[in-house]
Image (tube, rainbow, N blue to C red; front, side, top):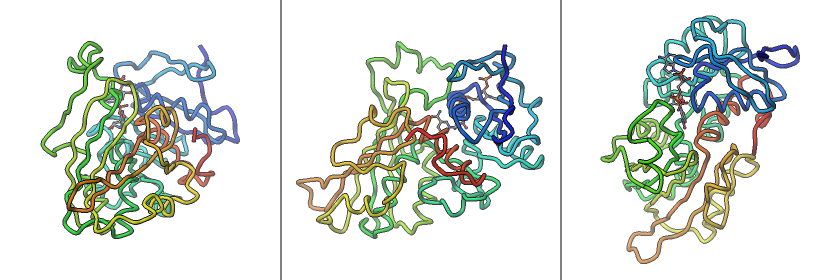
Length: 328
Ligand SMILES: NC(=O)c1ccc[n+]([C@@H]2O[C@H](COP(=O)([O-])OP(=O)(O)OC[C@H]3O[C@@H](n4cnc5c(N)ncnc54)[C@H](OP(=O)(O)O)[C@@H]3O)[C@@H](O)[C@H]2O)c1
């Protein structure tokens, strides 16, 4: 068995905590293809001691997090579950490593204590050179990147309720076995979950919108898609008026952004899966008294919604080219 260690001195060694999970596996795959990073360790819990194949055929062995040399790497990605991550983020920081935390634990609206929020296209200046970054949730990435240009342009009707119906593939739920996520329960089926505007991602979305000066409520209903990966969000936004050049609001905001695509057609999952890209479009809704926009946003929950954005942030933290090693 061949283990992957940082054999190449010109590459910065990084480690992944929770590497056997969905987000962690995606991280390991991206790191293995990254020109400036090398995978120094990969941890698992119940799967510790097992091995996995990386793109290109190399194999890694999952070690326990207790055995991980967190002080010997330039940066640690934590893809541990909520609650379990915070302690290990602190241990890695104490040992001197920079950290990108993919969990909820340190995100804005969840006790972040000033930790930069890693929505890269919105917070690049606070991420560049940072020692610790809280990577956003998958739904918030799709929804906030679609909403921010409207917030910043002042178009949202004061006091409006923004309604979001979004659907995610089942990898969004992680790989812990659950009866309601069995193939027979998910395939050829479609349902809402987390109903009642209570989903845990609401905290970070509300907090970020408030920081950007939005005066609105957010009503968010997630749905479970019978696919492995991908998120599509349909966002209903009451506005003060509909601009003649509607998509210009997003095109101007995201000019030069490599990982944002503003399109005339409807964003589809097949256009974004396995890519670190968000696709956004919008139309005006007909036959309503209140001017209203329908905004559509699609991402791969495991790439732009997790591991890809985490690598994008790590690149900025480590002084590398932001786009390095990422599938646009
Ligand atoms: N899935 C997504 O689309 C997505 C998107 C954005 C952010 N995230 C965040 O990324 C993190 C990982 O999510 P995931 O979906 O990849 O979860 P997952 O598939 O359930 O993987 C969790 C990982 O953590 C390990 N683990 C579980 N409990 C542990 C413990 N007590 N101590 C140490 N390691 C433990 C697991 O090891 P074993 O496999 O050995 O049990 C596995 O490697 C979460 O915080 C999640 O919120 C996920």
